[in-house]
Amino acid sequence: MKRPPDARCEQAGPQESAKLFIWFLCLVAGVRTFLFCAAFPFFNNVDEQAHVDLVMKYARGEPPRDLGHYSSESAYYISLYGTPEFFMAPQQFETNDFPPANWTLPAEQREQAVKSSSAWWRSNQNHESGEPPLYYAIAGLWLNLGRVFGITGAWLLYWVRFLNVFVAGSLVWIGFVAAKLVFPDRQFIHLSVPVLLAVWPQTVFYSIQSDVLSPLCFGIAFIGLIKFLRAEPPTLPLAMWTGLAFAATCLAKITNIALLPVAGIAVIFKLRNLPQRRTLRALLVSLAVLIVSAAVPIAVWFAWNYHTFGDLTATGSKIEFLGWTRKRVSDWLPHPIFTLNGVKEFWPELIASLWRGEFIWHGKRLASQGSDAFYWISSTLAIGLAVISLFPRSTKLTDLQRESLWLAFSSVAVLILFVALLSMAFDFGLCVYPSREHPYFTSGRLLSAAAVPFFLLYSRVLDRAFSGIPRIILFGGIVLFIVVSQSVVNWPAFSSDYNWFHLP
Image (tube, rainbow, N blue to C red):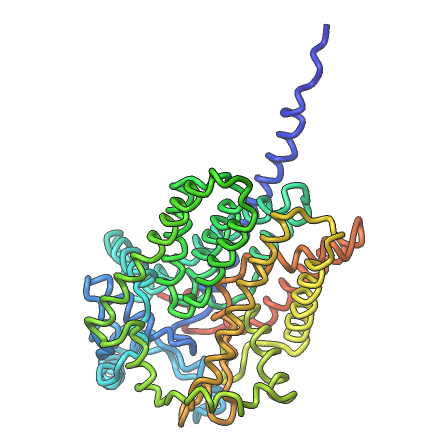
C-alpha cells in the first residue's frame, strides 16, 4: 500500500528552490559590488580620503581624540594613488587629458609629486574624526588581515573596499528574511525585496565609508522589531540582539540616531496588543533588556565623545570646521524648503540619490535624467500608496502586517524628516554643500539605513497594484531598467587608468 506524500516534503522543494535563488542573488550582489568597487579609482568625492585615514588610524589602535590631522600613512596613499577624475574634467588640463597616475611615474618624479602632496594632506584636519567607530574598527581589522596576507599598496586599499562585497550579499539575505516575516504567504514579495537589494545601484557600496553598514545593521534591527511584535512574550535573547542591532546602527552613522523612535513605536504597538495582563511582567523584562542593550553601547560612546571631543555626539568640532552656525529655532521656518521651488529642489534629488548615490565623474554628477525621474517618481508613488493602503481596515492585512508596514514607513519618514530639519537648522556659511544658495541635505545615503523597510514598501505596492503575469513583466522591466541604467551611468569608470584593473 502506497503512503500518501508528506505535505512537508512537497513544501520543501519550492522552499529550497527559493533559498537557492536567494543565495544566487547574494552572489549577484557581491559580484556587482566587486566589479564597481574595482572600476572606481581612489579617492572619490564623498570624503573617501577622510574615511581611509580613519580606517588606518583604527587599524593601528589609535582612535582620534580630536579632529586631528591626516596621518603620514594615509597622506602617502592619497598622494600616490589618488585620481583627479572625480573632481576635474580632462579639458582642465593643458593636454586635454588626465595626467598619468603618480605610481606610474619614474622614481624621482614620483617621489617629488608624492612628497609635495603628502605635506599638504598632513597639514589638513580630518573633519570626519568624530564619526562613530563601528565601521572603522571593523575595516581596520580587515585591513590588518590583508597585511597578514602580504597585501600592500593600492591592493590594500581595494582589499578594504572589497569588504563591501560581503555587506552587499548579506543585505540581500536580510531583505529576504524581513519579507518572509511580514508576508509569509506572498512569494512575490519574498523574491522582489532581495532582487531589488541585489541590483540597488547605491554607490556607497563602491567606496570606503561608514554608510555602508547602515542598511545592514538596521535591517537586522528591523527584523528584531518584527519578531518582537510576534513573540508572546519576547524572549530575552531576542530583546538583547535587537537592542544591540539598534546600538550598532547608531554606532555606524551618527544620523541613524533618528531611527531610535521607531523602536518606541514598536513598543507602543506591543503594549496596545498585550493579550493578557499576566504576560505584562515578562514583556517589561524583555523591554528592559532591549533598552539596556541599545543604550549601554551608545552611552559608552557618548561618554567617550564628551571626554575627548567635549560634546556628546562629537559633531561640534566638525560643524565649526565646516563653517556652519546653528540657527535659532524661530529662524527655521523662513526656509525655502517650504516653497514649491524648494520642494522641487530637495525631494527629487534626495530620493534619486537614495537609489544611485552621489558620485561625481569628470566634474559632473554620475546620473541620468531619465533614471533619476523614474527613481523619485516611482518611490514617491510607492510610499504614498503604501501608506494609503494601511488606513482602510478592509484591506487584507493582518494586524502584524499592518504594524510592520507602519514601522517600515516610520523608518523612512523619520530619516527624511531628520535631513529636512538639518537643512533648516544651520546657516551653512561659505560651505559648498550644503550652501546658503542651496540649503538642503540631499544625500540619499543618509536614508540608506532604511533600505530594507523602503524596498519592503516598494514591493508591497507592486504586489497589491498588479497581479499575475503583468506584475512579473512590470517588475522584470524595472529590474532590467535599473541594471542597464546603472551600467551605462557607471561604465566610464572602467576605462580609468587609475583603477584596480590597471594596477601593476
